[in-house]
Length: 374
Image 1 (tube, helix red, strand yellow):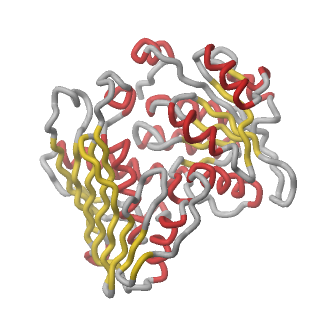
Image 2 (cartoon, rainbow, N blue to C red; image 1 turned 135 degrees about the vertical axis):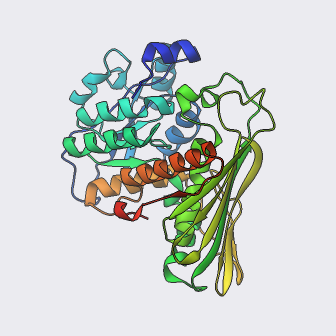
């Protein structure tokens, strides 16, 4: 598989990106202690700056312990703001030495998609637990490489699907499991926003992103249909549309897809970089449930055919809840809410959607039961 090198990336974007961090394999076996797992953020773009770093100021079981950046001017800014010592700041040339830093336990890879596999694998080899931002990789092959590297190194792996730790999303999962309204019959999930930024941004460059709206926002729609029904789809048919080809020259603008689930249940997804929609809806035998908004950073809101969902607390950022859940998994062996296999499953579905579009909307069968994950 062709890799995007650091030189290629910097030349394309004219901006810095981060390298990587990680941890000794041994971890405390209980959260009833004063230890917090140290997290190193790899890549200091907007998501790290405005979501992850602030979230790490309110986490219970982890903390911001290091950064990796290719932009020297960012080093002192972050050091001053978060009290990060120089010994915990890394660049492209020295990032491998992070393996010797016992204060860094988890590496959160927040880089363009083309760089996920390379840096996740190197983090695992450094003995650090890994969180890989979504989508997990450019393709299924890279997902396998990341999973294998983490298994060989004996480190934990998670994908940055923050919503699995969000209470309204968890309520939708519970409704599917407990069948308060009976069996689900239909699911619809929309995740889209309007992109009007720099047309040269990396998300619109297929060599860096691997795709457009589908890999960026569409994975949320895919996720919603699965946890909204408690089942994996068995086939998919998809279509692609473009109304701004002069802007979306290299990546997909808008994609719709239809899933078939076991027992005849059907589902629709819509994802776009040229519309603002943020909703999931599930119809059951005896009622319905809806989240709107369903995918943003919060607050989310839920309603059912019996009335509003409970007023779940949302005072903490979703990303903080996500990282604390992963830390608890490391500490205690509790369930990994978003294992690497889930990221791989979603990439299998993404590839099937692109295949369906390429073949004129052909139905593509999906064999996901063998993965053992929903």
